[in-house]
Image (cartoon, rainbow, N blue to C red):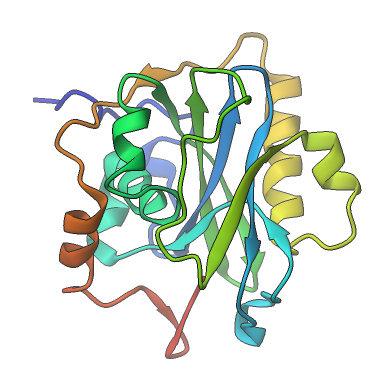
Length: 207
């Protein structure tokens, strides 16, 4: 039986997910007026081409158990952009279109793309960075503006361009469904995540 908010309804079925290759999740989070959630990287990480000061969409390394269901991808992503205080502001306003794409960002390293919609306009910022020493300065930005900027994390471009192309090709809009966030407490979920090792690349954490 499906639990409310944990359906598998994305454009990429579970059967087609590159489970053996996917290492992380990328978040395309849009406001109702079509702006994207972005933040600023606060740490260098040469192994994944991440540089301090780069603008980026949210990325998060996955745990092995999170690969099995759409809810795992969403829950992992929310650990990058929500806190116990901010999750209350998102209840009743956050919707998911599920995993809509998967892309190879490095040799044999794939990232799944989750599309979320904040069902309100971008005059407020309901999200909050739980680890501002790593990723912070969350803000809304237009897709065209982001794609035209110089100081953008490399992985952002292929993920966002793929989503734009998917949207162009589709005869109808993607199907968003409400996320049931009542039982989700970011700090509690993150403590459980810490009990399991990250999916790793050659002994290095991925994202």
